[in-house]
Image 1: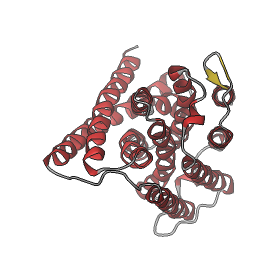
Image 2: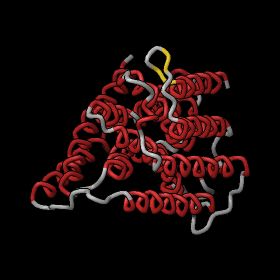
Image 3: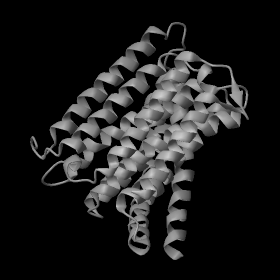
Image 4: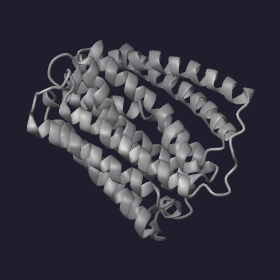
Length: 324
């Protein structure tokens, strides 16, 4: 019981620190004059991905649990997409994806490509490394930078008439507070790793399952806080950009884990059960892209049919993972 309370307490700290961190990131963005899609993809995604980064690296370095690390990464991707169904229900004025910009398709497509590389890395079993880094991890980094460049180029083409950067003391103060909140997230994330490890030991659950559900959901709490706030302000591009941008960054964490993991790359030593989680994220992202392109106006019980598809795939995939 105590270990569950510790896990919940660490999650609460992540929520509070993440919410404040995002608020300061929004202040920085306002001072710099950045657009909604770019704010969501970079500042908010970077802020809300910190728990996944710290937790996954902590799983590799401190807990020596690569399955927990990758489960956290892939589980967070799937749960982040499930948040879209939650947002659809909260805003309740028609499918949320029909209100978003086509530029988000770039984020979603690159996220699918990155997850597909993870699937290839796990299924191939290749343990060759280059300077201690798996070639799959190196490819992931190159693809991520290419995707970020595409998103940036799209934002630049659509930035006409936007306010220019003002800079000033307010941005500097907000950045210092941003870093302070990041430190709180770092400490709480390490606590999450320890608690999840203990829960896995006590319950006998596999690390892949614990990482995918427990850590995946807990470290996605900042995404929930951020996106709900953005939707309530009517900033739909910012909300969905945060989710898809965070998912791209999540996959890039595989490279960081490799850097801290001696020997073979992380993708060559983890359970093949993670392939299911990766395919789950790919399927859900594909539904998001279809929703953005098709822009259906139909909904059922405050949920668009794309959001219903996302929820059904997530719940079914989670059940299959538990049974495995």
